[in-house]
Image (cartoon, rainbow, N blue to C red):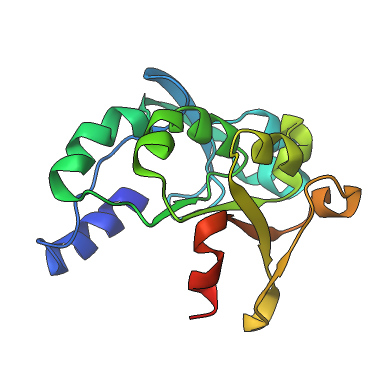
Length: 182
């Protein structure tokens, strides 16, 4: 399973990381996670994403998992660092819930960058980049272009910015936009 791989990696770098066998969401709870093969990257807490043909064919299994919030980790994180530069969220359609469970952490730590994956999963979850951007005031939206082609600023109000395609986006705190060119 993915957690076993993470544990192997932690064994190589024991002072550089901690690992937790939990899912991240909006509330602390126990929820089913839907998955296929143990090494599949398509596992999700969202049953709706199984409407995507290739995901639904894969995610035929489910188990109950503990769910925590990033806000719940805030005190522990603060013992290691006074600063968070990056939050990366790639949760197969569950990005909104992860953000909702991180609003205090984002407010307190003011990370420079919040990266999310945005794709067809969000169509079935009925979430848009505009909606995500509205809960991240003070951040500018950039799309990470494929094949190392760089980044381009996107307008949250432009319908073309809300295409449900395989895309990675980064919300950059306005005052840190210059950090990308330094």
